Image 1 (cartoon, rainbow, N blue to C red):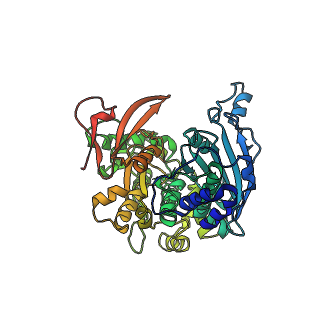
Image 2 (cartoon, rainbow, N blue to C red):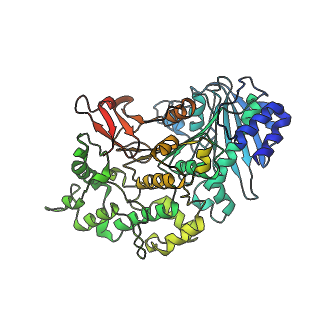
Image 3 (cartoon, rainbow, N blue to C red):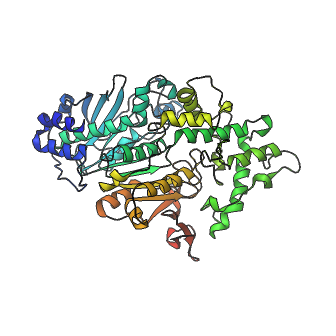
Length: 539
């Protein structure tokens, strides 16, 4: 298809640009920069007439600086700005006010008869940095957000996004196997290939470098791109990836079952802070610094039994059934027949985010996966899950789509591609052990001879105190794309990455993130809020 796209746009952009599309969209074995012309080969509006396979370009328009207005939501409700104004607080800040002028192209992609992939591409009218990025998605996607596109244009990128081929949640893919494939991986790939062709048509040449950086579902998209479509990107950043859905969803339902075993087992959200405080007290100082953040929770042996109520029930203690439920949350579900771990457990430090999986209802993403895609019964009761038969059936049916644990990345690395992984140690939704497991598998299965070869191609950074993709008590503000750019474009591999903790717009703490398996160790003097007073060491 990629070669067909190059020839299809040749009539619009000329033979030189078509050659650039071939090099960029099909994947030349050399990942070096192409010459990029910053004078457009065609006008923005004329892109409406570009003909590409399985593609209908629905609009192509020039948006003046700061003039973009997002389309109204499908439910017709007023946006945040309108709601704030209606309450008399004045309009909310415009997130698009500082976006420079850009060419906005929207299109519908139909790689199958049942596909309906919506995509949107934004390209700076001037000052293009010669780079391309595809924005990823979260959850079951089903929407196309413009704010990531605005952020990309502000830093000079041509950037595209997609709704992955459906509107809303899992229920709207139920009974549509082609749309499930689109969501799982095809929409990101098709959007990327099509966008690169349009970029070449607009600028007269394809991008020098192409990147993907995202988290959660976007982390899964990242790793699937590296394995399934190794030609699409030079650099890939995968955060907190939802990479092993059959097992991940089972663990998420395991948590729900633990707190809904009976009425006495349920742990009210008001008790989460007390559990978290006890976990931090037990684990915090193990790294030599008491700072409210657990550097490596796997060094900690925290038992919630210490919170057993002694003088009546309260928010500061746990009843015995609640102690047993909390213990299960720190334990991995196990296949009752093989005794194999199904998925890694929650780690100490994650307690403030337990409401997602241990709340009043089972975690929606996991429950919907098993209801719609495994059991194919919207009325299925999550408490009936069989951690042997049901998980095995889910894995068998969805290997290569929802389930993607293929860690052979030889083709991606052979092209010079780089992979940067990260995961929050306090992630309460996708447990951090999955990233460590994937990293270990990839280092074994990608043909590396030694640690230096591994480090030359892929690196993993665990983030102490970070929740799901961001937030939490530890420093977690990081521009993850920047170290990848430096790695690809300057050959500067990230040995450490400095993360910041930002409160009310002010940086109150910085801390080095260390390349796994190293950890940040305090040097013994200076402020513990300053990253320069720490060093990364193997422990």
